[in-house]
Image (cartoon, rainbow over all chains, first blue to last red; front, side, top):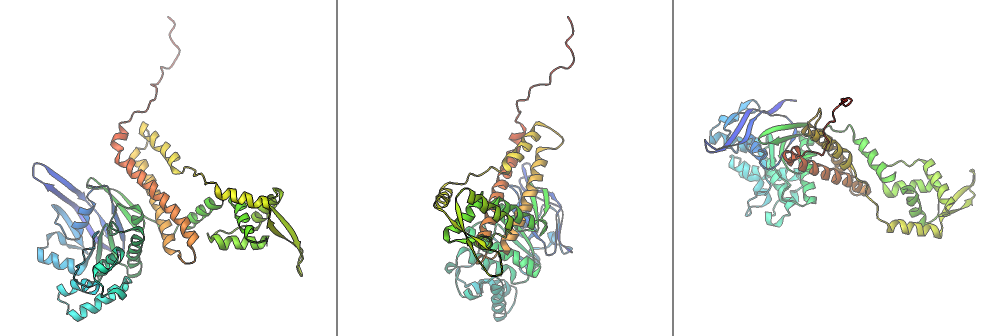
Length: 247
Length: 192
């Protein structure tokens, strides 16, 4: 397993010099390629801040962020934008799709902005939509799609440029339980089937349980780092449950 | 005992012999449970003793006669009574772990933060495996099994939310002083 992301003493402070608020305090985190990492913590723990820093959406106050050994914390705005378009995919809680564009056009937009010819971008967008099971709705506008479907389009948009890492910030926060299941199953499948590296922030234990590893933040530092073992005790659970049901 | 009532529920449909009952039970509840023939036989014997079922002997070729069971009127009433009574939920992790947490607050070799962490790790591990099983299950053919898994998942979620709450209140909890009497002076009292 190779390292995809590594942070060194990553720190983010807000506020003024005499009243600083430390959102992240010298965090050292390593994320492996193909890993599904969930970041959890109470409000104010710094979990979203950590995600935005890793995704180049904010700049650190101090410390380093290395994406495949390249220090992204010192990139200028243009290079950072290009990095985000080409190497990173984002999924947010409130979908953020463009209402006047179809699903296919929404997904193609990232590629078009990066210079891909329109026809090619649309073809690749269609393939990405197929990957998330939305090919038959590619001409629909967001208003014609359910919450879960919109979020899947958002995921296709995040995946279309074949990013090194997908970052998701409470992707199921705005969905009912059935749609949440759809979306988290889809996310898990991309990790299992194409080896996507995925970092997801959530407050929902059920969502976090799909991950390979959960990191817990509190007051800007990592307080627990928990690798979840795959198949070991599945039989034990089956036995426990049937025993409970049948005595 | 649930096996007893499961058999009554099946016999309510139509009479069956022991082997059929075992197979039907597995099909209906599809909970990946391998019923042992011995368990069916002994439960049927108890049901017969309690006059909740009756049987007739059936002759079959090349095999000993076998019993075909049917439900009695008392059996039907018992089944109805069972359906009409709610199941009382036994309280789960709350008690054993609660005790551990409160004792760790008094003092000891392990801090309450660590106690919470250990428990949380285990719960997430179980939740991870339950959701993995849930993901693999086929909603078209394994719905009862999915229901069972969802029950486990939701209880684990509730336990984890409770742990989160304890963590959030840890500062208050650490200031709680339990009513423990001070240690008594040791040794015999001096003669005056």
